Length: 115
Image 1 (cartoon, rainbow, N blue to C red):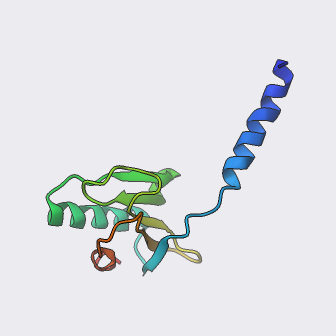
Image 2 (cartoon, one colour):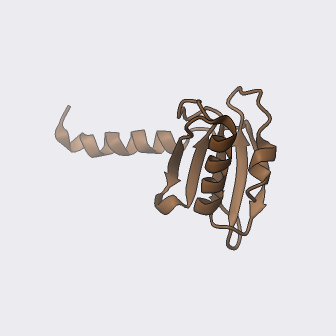
């Protein structure tokens, strides 16, 4: 393969990754006037204190404006159970959802306390 086709191949792979379907098992929990980083920190602290286990937070959008907070003890799996914190769809603040990832735990109530 000639090197001149490498950028085209890379662009094709990137476009294919962007075209992947969205995860459909995300349930909307609510919205908040707080910044996404503040909401994510509250959720992580609440879960860590309650479970007495470490919690993993993963920046999903630069500058902590999008954060995935994984359930205590859960691996940071892209399809695993997590609170999904994103900028509000309009205006300032945050939108929060919960991706169950097959987890039967009822944690949206813990998330709602941080909104």
